[in-house]
Image (cartoon, rainbow, N blue to C red; front, side, top):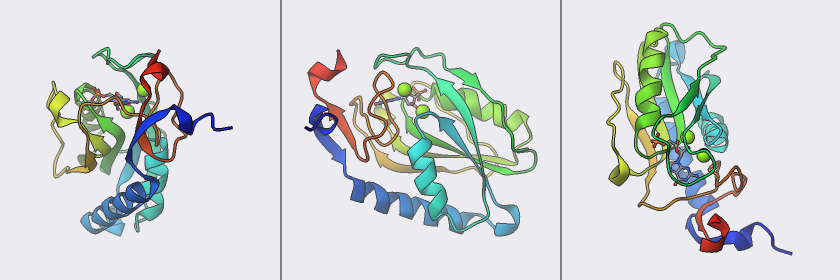
Length: 187
Ligand code: 5GP
Ligand code: MG
Ligand code: MG
């Protein structure tokens, strides 16, 4: 009995499209940094967990990995606008290049709060690598640090999407593709 995939109305990016795009992003990152000054990938939990795992495995550099936590949605589909952050990093980012790894940049408020925190911990540059970007929804424009770059997987229209790490009410993160739920599933 199908009990997960039957909740999906439409697939926006398939597993194959995702894996080839993630490999391209990883090659770009591998080319942009030196092994002698390799980056720290800081994943924004929980949404970035699958993207970070796939990206990290494709990067040909001795990177470090850590996580911060940001929560802005509660259990709905509308951002509260004020993300709750926990930045208890184990890796010392002082003097390191940081790449913040996100599932999706929407209003921009999460990154606008996170980037200055990493800068204040002494990061020599802060880049962002986001699997999806919804530019039409941007309210706050985040500022990268130093020679930081914005890497993005795909541009997303104004849908509330789930899968590949992204949830609705803490469900559907385990879908291996990205899609839109059937309207009755958003209740
Ligand atoms: P912000 O509005 O601060 O840029 O986005 C914060 C976070 O909201 C994203 O990192 C992501 O976790 C969540 N978010 C934004 N848009 C969507 C969406 O379409 N689907 C899901 N599941 N989460 C989203
Ligand atoms: Mg996120
Ligand atoms: Mg969420």
